[in-house]
Length: 222
Image (tube, rainbow, N blue to C red; front, side):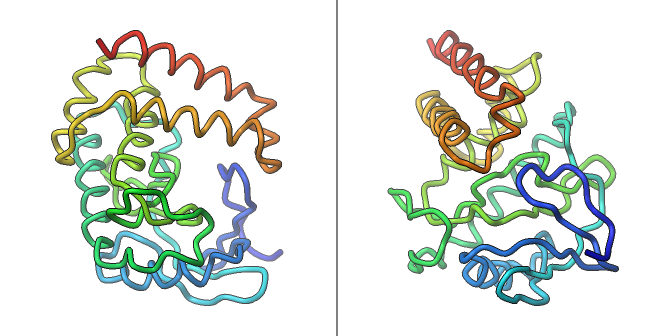
């Protein structure tokens, strides 16, 4: 395929073609494109440019992908605000329950990104500027995304976890619940073990990494 292969994708090969991105499209792509068109005025998500039976074309989000979580509080606070903004924008769109890759998760409050993490965010000047890879979007509770963000932004770094957890939750405006984080970790472990596409993640020992995080959360929740 013509274009520049973008590195870092864990499940798909994604190519940059000029100022657009061409990537494989799943059956849920039409529904995701509806969501992206709704988010377009915010300027923080790709804009759908085209869709055929096997690929989608999206606008390119310039910036640096956060493969490693930024340690600065400013980036953490801005990421929590960005997630809250995305959730609030989708709250009126949750009546559409079908067509997503994943079934609606109760209690439905917003449309989830499903994988809100530094590796799906572009940063400019050290702050989050856009979110991509919306394949896992589906209706669900706010805590599902918040818990995954805590896992990827806070628990991925060894230092100052308790304070940074409070900072993220207070900025977003949600109470921290370790049981939610544990549920999200359990789901990720089950996915890695059972989903046929997660071959690399199984080989790289991601299950052991998340099991270590479970032990940390269980040990610190008191």
